[in-house]
Structures are given as C-alpha cells and as structure tokens.
Image (cartoon, rainbow, N blue to C red; front, side, top):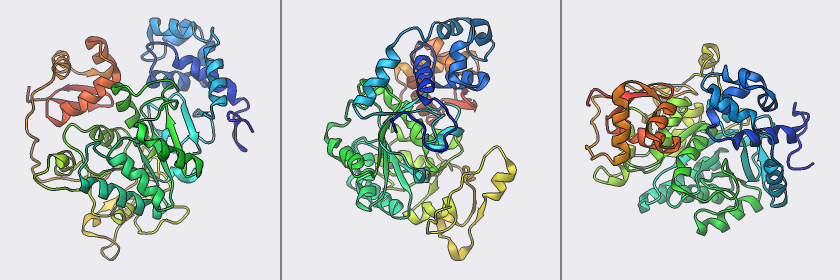
Length: 427
C-alpha cells in the first residue's frame, strides 16, 4: 500500500486526487484553514470546490468575489503533484481529513489543518491523548514535572502530544518514551527541518521505534519562523482530550493552547501550581485563579477528571459531541469521594469543566507592544472578527491570534463569541 492509499475500510476511492485538490486550495493566497473548511463543507468535497465557478463560490460565507476568483484559478499548475512525489521519496506521508488515519478529534474543530505532513505513524489509540505544554525556558521543577507527568500519563495508556520545543515539550516527549508509551510531536516548521536541532535523535527514536509521529501542517521546506508556532498550538489542542499546562509565564504560548482548548474546542485544561513567587508559573497561576484550568497534583488527577477512574481500559474516553445534550449527559462522570482526590471532587464532563472562582486577581499590568496597541486601536471601532482585524492591521492571522490571547489576559480585550473580539470595559 502506498503512503497515499486509503487504509482498509476507508470510504475514499481515490485519496491521491483528494490530497492534490487540498494542496491546490492550500496554495491559494488569502485562503486559510477556516475558509477552505467552510467551502468544502458547503460543496461536499475539495474537488467540487476546485470545479465550482466564481459565482457559486462567492455565495459561501466569508469568501467573496476576490477569493472566489483565486479558487477558480487554482489547479492549473503541477506544483502539488511534484510536492506529493517529493514527499513520497523522502518518507513523508500526507494525511487529509478524508483519510481514515486522520486524528479523530481534529474532525470536530472549525479550523483543522488542510493537510498534515507526517513522519512515523498515528494509530487509533493516539486519539486517547493529552497535550502537555509549557515554557521553553522552564525551571528544573518544570522539566522534572513535565517528564514525570508525561511518563505516568503514558503508563496509563494515554498518548502524549506536545510541540517538540526546548524545555517542557522535550521533557514531556522523553517522559512518554521512558514509560514505553507513545508520543506525537507537532512541529512549527516543515518536516525537512528539525527544530530544535538537538532533538533530531529524539525524533528518530519516536519514528524508528514506531512510538508515534512527527507531524506538521507546514510545507516540508518551511523554516521554523516565529509566526508558524501559534497556529500549530491549535493542532495540539485539537488532537487532545485535554491540555496540561506544566509551567508557563504570562507571555507563554502555552496560554494560547489552553485558551483554544477550552474556549474554542471544549477540551479540559489542567494546570500544575508552582512557587507563588516564581514568574515562570505566573501564567499557570492565572489559569487557576480565573477558573480556566483544573488544579492537578499528579497524573492520576488528570485521568480521573477525563475518565472518572485511575486506570484506562481500551474503551475509555469515548468522545461525546459537545453540541448534543444527550451525548454530553451520557458522558458525564460523577466522581464519588472514595474515588476522587481533593482536586477532582466535582462532576466533570468530556467537555470543559466550569469553575466559579472567588474574586480572581488580575495579572500585573504590562505595557502594550506596538502590535498590541494597533489591535486595541482597531477594536475601538467595535466588535470585529479575526479576518477583519487582519485586514485592518495588515497582520497575519497567527500574529493576531497570539496577541489577542495576551490582550485578553491583560484585560484589554474580551472575546465575544467564536472568533469575534471587542475592547474591554477597561479601555
């Protein structure tokens, strides 16, 4: 079976054509994952999107006449075909949502990757996963706890997902491997690059020992640029049942992952407390004080909240549809005192656990950067979605999403609904 053939049981007759169509759409400027996903859902398949005329496409919400013309012009070069062949020669698999191997939980989010490039293998059991994130410049405490939590989670049968960066990410991947478990690295660059360089041996161990995969939505030659990392955070959040923040300061990208997981994807968020006087833990403490995360002291707390028991049977963590009340009610787990810890004596669900905190304290005020000030000024005109903010500021969506997270933490901006934001009452 070639790398792009559908596995047994896949309903897709010609996966190669599906992947090619998605690669053509991905190459169109001005088309991000949200709009591509919306167009495919509206017309039924990526091939139908490519075959549609401008009039039909312009009726899809958010596309408009200009973007419709970009799609009509797609599919006229052979760059995707060359890319597909180059990936096959270098051992890179290209996954698409129509593939049975596509991560199950990415099917439930509004902005899934158009395709995923993969080295190694993602298995069905990897759908039972926890994302472990934290600071690159972590303390010794953070590194030790990341490795211990990941090791214990992997020993419980959960796959550990992280971003492969220095610090907490690397410690988490290593902890999962030491326990004989599985781990998935979501890179913020293409797979022809190894970031950071010193993790080359780690990644080869994951792939060579069939212990997981290294994946990316970036083209294989894409370098590890700063703007590529915030978008990859949504993949970590989207693939996971819950996100565990080990150690993070107030500017850590881990807070972006936590926000996406809870607010956009309905996932559980967990945070590990650190020293009260440590700036390295100020971000995790903020999550706890605002009720945005459940306090956990060990891996068993995480497992209990996700599934209601300390061992993980093969059928554990069946995912409920958060939009279906019947499914959500059926997935609710009432933790009894004899089976719970102080951190988990509540009723929890597969969706986000809601907590009513007592008078959370705001984080210390910090001066805004030029980019943050520009976003705040644009929002002075009223509620805007991310696309409108990008148009008004000429900033990339990844940059806008990253800065919006920090502006929410500082109280300058509030999220209204979906991807719509407004200035808060403090301004």
